[in-house]
Image (tube, rainbow, N blue to C red; front, top):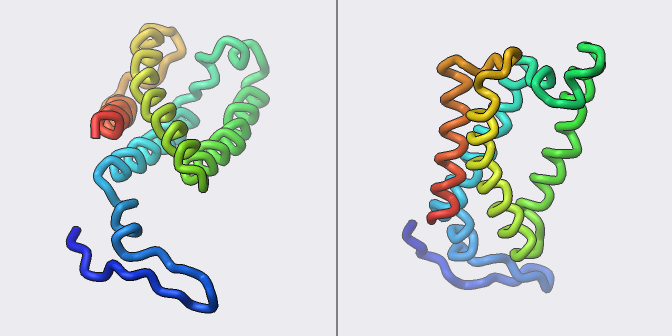
Length: 145
């Protein structure tokens, strides 16, 4: 992206980031991280539809309704923490979180491969497979770039 404006401006004693710093955040690697996170979240929506809690060792022993509620509600703090740390003010924390999540997206494929023959696995369809594999590819591209 071509940067035309590189000065910092002061308004009421506060410095505003230059356009250069803003466009830096739009790097291709960030694109792939946000894509991986988007695909992961969409996969989790699909996981609710596909009753993924039936595959989890602890949840599959509980009542169906209770397991579903726990599975769904557990994603609130999980994704809050992921978003909070992914865009944290400390660049080190943000980068380490992004590397961890991108790595998980790749490992996640392996988990689904290991569980592909589980009797309650409902992810053997084109949409689910697309979400799982494209999430992993986006995570890998983030790590490479």
